[in-house]
Image (cartoon, rainbow, N blue to C red; front, side):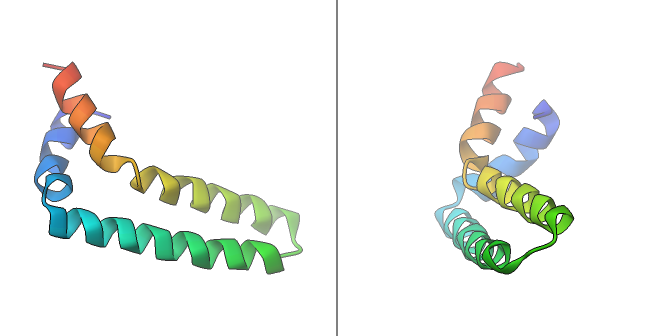
Length: 74
């Protein structure tokens, strides 16, 4: 992650209200996309759903990633 982006994200990810809301949103979207994945039969769409789930899972670690990037690149 780029240092400037990480610094801009820190207020959002360090505020418990915002952080919890973001985590809840990501979990709900993961559940929804997982249900869609179970029903999907088109291989191309399966890959798209898998990719979206992976990106949503990255949101669950956004706080740690932003904090680490802000520290590393001083």
